[in-house]
Image (cartoon, rainbow, N blue to C red; front, side):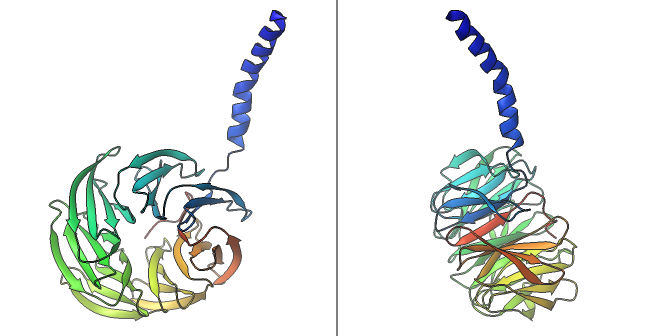
Length: 328
């Protein structure tokens, strides 16, 4: 009897590495990660088949996400859960959790990778963390007027620019000192903000209206308003250092902005409140979450048509995949 047990143990020990290898080989890679903010879940989608791979709980109100500078982790910001969750960017599997990060709504790393910034929408403040490539250490909490939302950085990593939806303003904060340098009024309900590739202008999505505000951040003046759709919200670059997608949640369309001419050069009809976007590495498809209809749309960029609607959870917000186009 004992010899049978020994034989069984030997067989098990030999098969275990083989079974683990099989399981690992079946783990999907380069999945699409979608945050379902109202369901407190993550949906993982297959890029090739457009099918759901899995859905799992992540924490309260996950809104935005971004890769770490080394691309080894994908950070999910759970705003109401007061935590950051680190996922494998290729498989979507949870790596670790970082607790006691107060209300991380929108997050970002400075281009020089020395600062991690977290906008606390409901707490009306911006939190600054020193980042050494591994650990985040709180440096300062900076109060702002009302509802700090999205952020952008200058190329030299001297300044972070914050939109404030509740006070219709944009503020510039010095990264080294964490002091507010200036605050200027913009249009109603400013949301997404991005720096042009030449580091010359800030583009701000004015959600309460139908335009993109162009700001010369060195002179602190608006130089132009680019007409867009209604509910102009967020941005995603095509990756060619020229064209930029802007989502319009109310008019159900995505516009294309030429960042050299500062003109609206195209429109793509997308149903259901398009919000956050992602672009495939080959520049052929645009993926966008649809906040109002619990779906993700896949857009063929060449034809400017939706080719697939994929069901996900309630109020899908952030979307990411590892094999993505550059963010300029």
